[in-house]
Image (cartoon, rainbow, N blue to C red; front, side, top):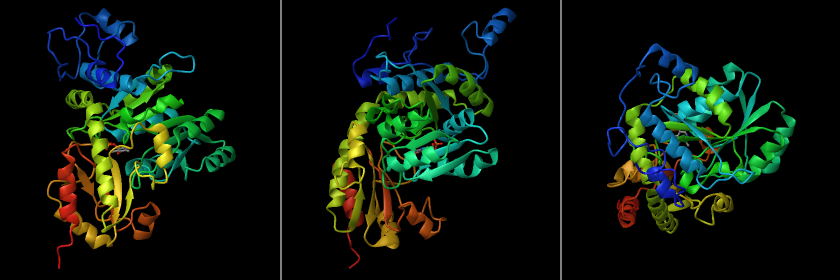
Length: 412
Ligand SMILES: *Cc1c(COP(=O)(O)O)cnc(C)c1O
């Protein structure tokens, strides 16, 4: 049997091999373990499993071999090349969940209690924002929202509110692809021993590794680039404090019941193997698409981290390998023109979500934020003409051709 414990020097080698255990029946790929429970040879073995004396699966909500492979692969990617203060490689524990929201819920509920506050910023993923706004406050957990691109303001808030327990960051984030500085904010948080959690969904570990800066937790919606093909909803919570991850966090995960399943884990494993080549292609394409859009007369603004005009260009350059595949842009002619543009697309797909092989575009003002009053929308940068785009890995000339024909003013 091959030794998968080699120290690979490349990201893709890790993505392809990490976490894989040889199958007892010599299957090439880890099978989908479609089994809700696991058998004991004898009662004694059951006892040993329950007490933790013997490793082994017991019940599907607690774990499954297909899920374990996905978890170990993500942990290997988020920790790839990252060393702790003592110079040794960091060790991470990953827990796969049914969705990104399930992972974020486990994070919050296992780390916070009544009276605690979360310091976070504008432009969080909508579901996270609502969790913090509607689900956690009745449990006594509240949030403070600020523009955390202003580190001095963050410091003032942390000093003024000793009940802040966690800094929750998402970078880059919708709708204008804003970034916050992971290094500076984590340093600041650590002066007060705050927990730091980062949603790394848009970047993926290929473009950005928050654990480099000493954060405590990373969450992903694996639904997006990690799966990469839009075939399954999923999420993961990773942490450095193994005692806590194996203790309180595992307990909360198991009891809230947001576990993943073997089918989705299988799809995720296959998707992650090509993460590097997909992200390279996504990024190359996005650079060209952004340049095309920036030069187009119908477009007044392009928000892409690879453009020097983006206010967070330097923050992104500092902490990301590449500006990535997410961008947004504004059509000069507003709401109706944007709807028409979206309707005229032929190859690119009209859909929310992101990170799939195909290019996805959505018009938040008529879709995700349709019910939100215009003034409130605009506070978050969602203007009538804003289009969000997840640049796919098609041949870029075809993406541009489609955008060009959809933008063409052929009414007259
Ligand atoms: C999609 C998304 C989530 C939520 O993930 P689900 O898998 O839909 O539950 C959280 N954060 C970000 C940045 C996302 O894009």
